[in-house]
Picture (cartoon, one colour):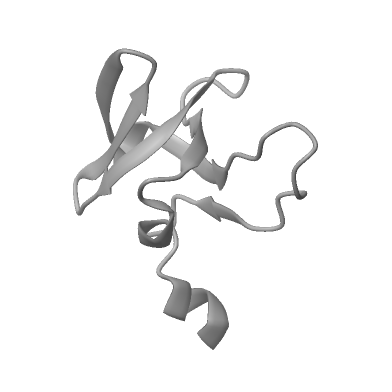
Length: 81
């Protein structure tokens, strides 16, 4: 891992921003929302009126979500922590 990536603390650096969570047990399923927290046990994502906890065992990937017409995502963080 490069020093730049570790300094960013991904996904911790994305708290408060829109993310897309890929589910570990279903490749075609994902959740979009605002990342509220990252911890040793998992992540918390707010999507619409729901706030959900996802344990690391159910998270296949996390990527920063961009609005249509925004910049192209260049970094995807996979469950390797």
